[in-house]
Amino acid sequence: MFRYICLTSLLAFAYAAPIDQQMATIEPAMELRAPPVDNVPAAPVEMRAPVVGIMEAGLKQSTDGAYNFYYRGEDGSFRQESAVVVHPGSKNQHLKITGSYSYFDANGKEVVVLYKADDRGFVPHGNNIMPQISAAAKQNSQLPRMVEEHEPMPQSPVVGGVWSDMTQMQ
Image (cartoon, rainbow, N blue to C red; front, side, top):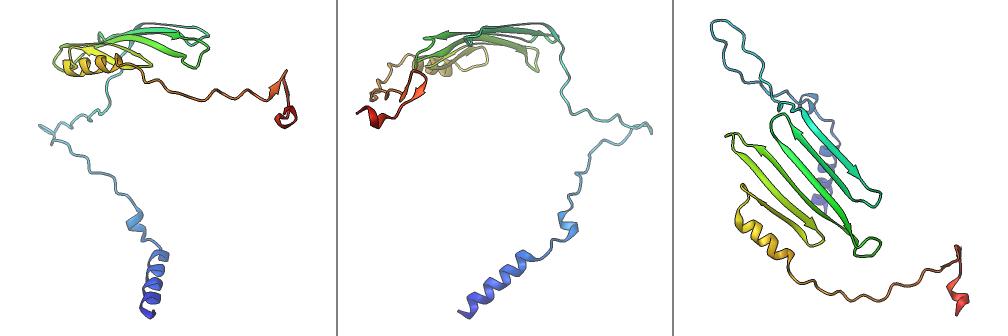
């Protein structure tokens, strides 16, 4: 028993001890640069991606949740997407989305992706997406729905905008 008390005391003192200031200080990482050539200082390395300007863009939104947008970048990139509301006002309400995007990769090859998404899933097609992935996503979106059996939703105890006590109605 004495050993456990000693061990517990030792751990309590160790956790209560102040942290050495040098341990708490985080040293900045050393910056690696190539040595200057002919005594000319090296230019600082830019670590940020270049900002790409938007050449053209548009957006339309509906109060029901439908939308349509697009943009085209200075670098040739492009994206467009449209969504419509399916089964509005029902418990099965969802968006049906179609869209596409494109950009040029590091080798100058244009990458184009077309996609759709709805309550059945996301299905992409493109020249950088393996055909097996596109086929599996399409097949999955076409599977029959599982019918979920739920008990009917209980009626709200609010009648005519006034809260009513359900126990008095019986």
